[in-house]
Image (cartoon, rainbow, N blue to C red; front, side, top):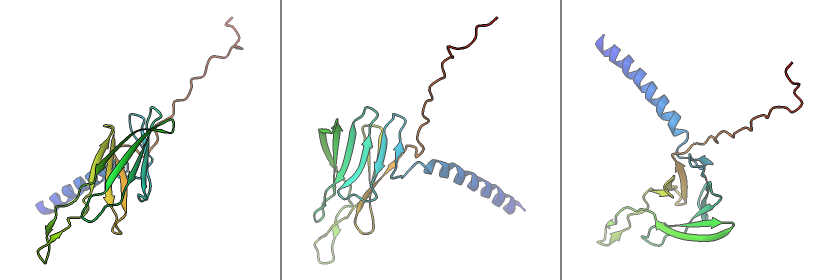
Length: 166
């Protein structure tokens, strides 16, 4: 009898955990658009070719995310371009992570290969960089919401034709 009561309690706890975590997961790991509390909106392409994503910032700037090819045993290089009024105002780059090289069968080094990478952009945008089984790189955004924020409705002004009180 005691075993079945644990199973019922454990099953209920599992259902609650699945509900809570699935509600949060809906906004995570998305190509977007993903909306962030600071007003930024991030949208990714299905695969980087070479463009990966565009981040539209609340101040009107855009950040374009691109990827270059990786050479033998080298990491991919992610390039970020900040645009203001369609003009490039800043460019920076960072490499993706890769697994350490190992000893190969014939004594040579064996390349470690791609490793999923996490980057934070401007302290607000949480971006993951991944690789498909066919070798194509793609990005997903985390921590935001896939639901657009509510648009503020203008309040109705009192009508000027209202009749005065008696």
